[in-house]
Image 1: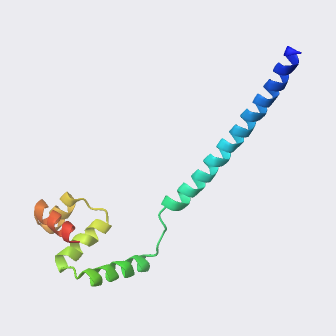
Image 2: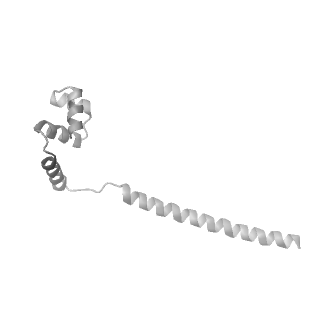
Amino acid sequence: MGNLAGIILNGQLILLIIVASICFVVTFVVFFMLYNKLYMPVPQSLSSQEERLHAFVQSHELSSREIEVLSLIREGASNGEISAKLFISGNTVKFHVHNI
């Protein structure tokens, strides 16, 4: 009788492990799909980006120098690169970035 109980218990344990594994895989797949959907950048056309930049500039009344700094930031330039390209100090770049 003891062996029979052990076999039944092992069968239930195996079923529990299978169900838990399936739940884990499903949860992982759903999380991965949602993560990619939420955090992948949405490609935008250049005209759309330009329109957004123009709207931002208009709504925040940026100076011409701040617009130059913002354009370089959009291109991925660091503060040091912006400083070198515009012939201004690093502190001035920080000031403009703060204003933006």
